[in-house]
Length: 286
Image (cartoon, rainbow, N blue to C red):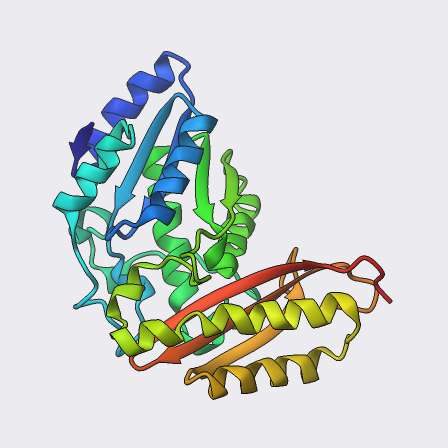
């Protein structure tokens, strides 16, 4: 596996591949890799001849008071995992490479509507930071396909909308959430949890599954169902940020005839913010 730190080095290698008409897949990450990331890498390998992974802790997607300074940076261990997974090229830039005029003065990419709800309402500016850095990485790597996890479902839709709006010739693949045996979605931030918090953390997915079971069998009072799921989180020792039932395609408020829904939730355990979601298909929409 080759490791590069500059866009010039990255493009030199990718240009050679594209010159040979090889298909390039890309997986952007912030590092501190876990099995969920490696599933994305494996999917990327099935979609292309060459796999590029980036590791970059992006400052512009962290809002005030968040964990940018303490976010785990484990490049050496991550590099070994990626090499063992068959990755061809690791792009690990410094912030100055992607933000040569400073992060606060960079051109921004905004995806209105999708960026302002749910996690976007709780983390103002977060998705502008995500869309901006992903657009920069797409322009640097120029992949044919990029792979993202569905755990960050809102992020996935933001990226898809950006690609469509900007006419970028990139196929976006979403991969189902990878979970621990007890249901907890894999996340780099799970390492922040204490032993007691880790024991409580699967309660987030349990609440989503309960809501999903009720939703498909009988109850269609979305607001009441979300309120009950929030109460379950509180009873389980979590502090809900939101629980919301949305239309899966665009995160709009669901209408009676909609059948493809998704239940999304965010909750705090101590100082750790967890997110998760559960797709639901209604067989008999109203």
